[in-house]
Length: 393
Image (cartoon, rainbow, N blue to C red):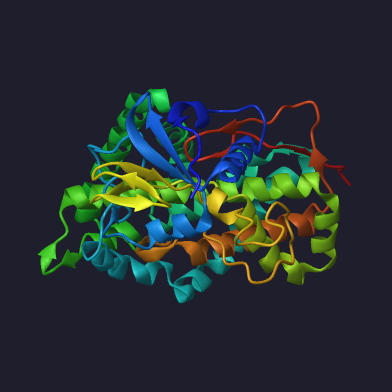
């Protein structure tokens, strides 16, 4: 196996001025090799893994590649996101508790409200003839659903987004900012947990207060760590996937018009957008001396696993560099693999389907505003803005 050139984490994981530049970097690295030695600030060596086979193998081997640390620049984090940063068998017990909230039946019961929320947003946006899709639609839509599931006041959404940006999108050099934001989020939930203990409601947090693992009640600290993860997952992932999907469709009117003419293509198109624009880049921590793709790694070192690189690997997907909205056999890793595969994938797919089909039912023709540049942030990659314009009728 040919190894790539030594890399510096901070040089390839920063904000950029060209949308899609992070994905192009991953593609270019994969062409040089499937594994790349790298460092954080010239120290803390880790491996950036580029190939689908190697990334899948790491994700499916939690005994060797632990989730106790999930960002390569923080191999010994002073925080925990539950259940993401918990390994089996404890992780399995947490998934069992959470499963009923995200099972297909529970997601189906949410569908009427999901339709209501996106149409309330489109009622506000449609008549303008322009919008910043990220701020005006993508962040508002799934975030409203998340906050309602958790019993949170939607009026707090703006503050939540400030915290979210600091935690997931700040420059790697601003680690203290991210940690401070986590502390503020946990203080918010600490107060909310106290309120729910006094006056339970029909929401996830109220139910979580009744949970036990191995006949021991879940501690308040673990509940806070759980809330922190749900906060991050609920406020960012679907929003960024919607934004990249709309970015693609604004740039490719033939794909857009084909979907409008034949809505039965939407499910396969969404899977293809998930494959091509996979923005999550998890890390894992080696528990023993081993190797990845022929490159040795020591206990305590990190591996970085950009899912976009796996999902655009030509060894796995014919014409991997192209978006094919009718692609068949699309076994992508956008939701991860192994025991930590995304628990919310059913809800995410529903929000993507409803959000995209309802927009195109009401606004089938639109384009990018050429006068407003689009920028892309690093860390958990995503678009900062997406200026769209359309003709009002």
